[in-house]
Image (cartoon, rainbow, N blue to C red; front, side, top):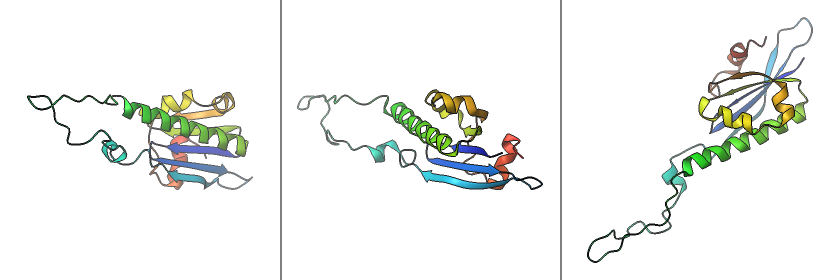
Length: 148
């Protein structure tokens, strides 16, 4: 029976397919992998100071400037990335038609991903680990889920 293992964080997405024929050991193969630009780098590198970097603040000759600073922008970017990850997971689960799949995602985005999965993907989720396994060798990733 084929199974899918998906390991994600805000910057990486890896989907593996585990196949097992009769009288053989399971084999794992990478079926999808990408790096997200959203998850890499500093926020200051992604946003420009459109209002002007050298504005004068208060005082006799200056005026205080408040350009509606985006206080929750990091949280919003995290939520957006989690929605995109869930969308990709939904597509893979539909495409592969796998009855069981496993998820490994860090605790900061795990719940957000689960919230955005469709009902079919949620009902077929066989295991969920609150851990970032994106850098784990594919030969070791099955051990984390007991898939053998």
